[in-house]
Length: 296
Image (tube, rainbow, N blue to C red; front, side, top):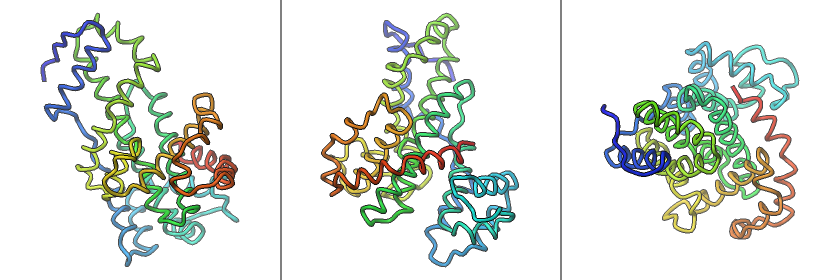
């Protein structure tokens, strides 16, 4: 593919124009949904699925099996005794929790990889895990489906690493002097937010379609940040919006202080009262332990 020929005046404008052109032409390289992740999602939606099927599925990938056992033995899940086998892990943690661990582990290996930007990707990954974990806690408070909430929280920003990878590819294909000029720009938080935050929803919608994600997850990807305009699954969008803000407060409290977190009408719309928010914030250490355990 020949490099784009941007005509904008500044490097960041040139980069944005090139990104928009690729979006319009449908030339964004989307990651494949890892086979294990696809199979795990199918199992979790299958009422006849059992622990033996999940164990057999995880056993097919020895690296995944090793990661799952390590995570199952981590402080986040606090096993009463060392977990020595996948069958034991199922017995200790349950099929739903083990499914989450297997799904999250396989996704990390597939979608969250951008060579040269490991630190940024790590931040995105940690935020995704924290959002998924907080979404479960909000769902419990609201007495709605916890497993679905986790998936919405985990995948709501799935377009972000893909935008970053696309930006990196475009930069590499452009002239070397332009790439040098771009180097300092990608490290600038405001410009990073302009591109990744500004375009991840469009890319995330494409990924949701390619991966055949559940309808509520696809809707959340598109509307969690604009839940007033959600055409369906509005509660899931609001719930994920709250989980995203809680994750930001946990991981970057200087950007999302507690006063700003609490001062949003979405809590009232979800019928979450101040004492409910207190309980969610009281679980920050638990969520952080999960983030650290799954931070592969």
